[in-house]
Image 1 (tube, rainbow, N blue to C red):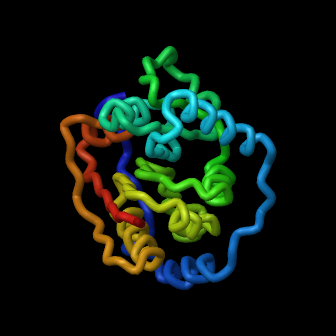
Image 2 (tube, helix red, strand yellow; image 1 turned 120 degrees about the horizontal axis):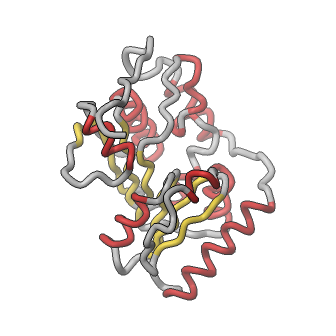
Length: 221
């Protein structure tokens, strides 16, 4: 898988011209889509695992964790936190198992849109919130499919914590930084990112393929 990843191609040359209008509209009007019982059960499972390990442990969400590499590494780095690795794909979560997962981590299958809202609904705050290499949806007409353009995005403010987003598409991170800035009232910057210890298979592949990596971070607390 190393060194053969295609570069992202898009007609978009900078942050989308409709981004601010879209984000501010979502901030003004709460997202009302019904929550599925399957996702309520997923949250209950995750919180029960945290309670069994240490009910007082600060919570980290690895959103869109894929095969769980990042969840494993985050849990090892933050040994006093409980880490939930969340992905909607059973295939990705099951691929390459058994993956040795620390006792302070759990991989859970659920829909992120519902899971984020359920956390907020239950008043649960995050210590850290990772959004690593999400699908960039690079077509100009796909803005609303990017997480910062989705109607659920304002819920992130209720979850708090240190939010970190990484991508190999500079424009995605620039847009995310702008959206997080409007959400938090802070200045959030997109910055080049380089590491010798990749956290995800995508990060490893992109580095091996010579891609530029970008990230943005903000403390919503």
